[in-house]
Length: 379
Image: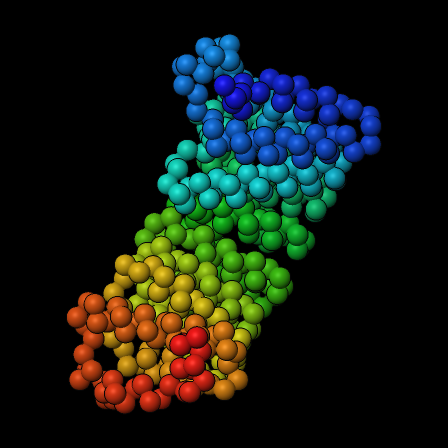
């Protein structure tokens, strides 16, 4: 029988320690990068059956012991290592976070070897990272905040870590402030009480004229994480709509459209409001880039499928306007046509569509489609 990650854990722990203690150039960073894929494999297959303990001669709890040992070794390396080692550790845990999110989207609920049930050393891990934050430069503080974000599921209840994240939002160092926005977003996905405080501070930060552009964009990205509960999502959506309507920055508006669409996608009751917002951006006064982004967000929401969109002459005419817009890229013409057809399908399937409810009949709509649009659709 092929050895499982838990059966390999002792050797992996030994290999990591030997690599970290080596004086050979690059050996320590290589050991860190090697343990990354192993941690991901271990997280995917972290649960052992009683038979596996017997087959591999393992003592119950031995795998957890070595999991704690490996993670503490990495935390120690982050605390005492050079910049390259810190970057490598951040890299492997970023990859591990992406895997956990992917598994979560597929229905898995546990956090693998990084779950609180498997870790006896949560406080020690957080303490080691906090030392780097307290004593490091702005780049090291940013890396520490990133790790706190990756480990949000074990750090979200720590008052000290919460304070570090919130206080760093107003940092004058761009890297630190951006990292705090990322970490705050990760915490907001899991902790509703933290998210409300974070949202209040985020709204004030994005309203201030003194906030740098890079922070405004990172803050707009963070809005997408405000979906822990319907009450939070509703408040975040209203705040975001106010910000986007008051902003004259195209790039900020584009990012915020995406974030608000992600919130609406999670909570169906917000979809009609989001649809109206997207429609308001589908006109030439907004510029080609904003029109294109609004269309992409509309297609993203339509992909939800379960929501039956009410027939809307305004929406249909907006899409027809995009289809007939000569300077619109062909690929976006095609997206507009797909959205148009999908909306009509939803309307008909829910018995809400009725040509008589429009000022124009359906036979009057279709001649408005450009010849170019029809050829793209047929292709």
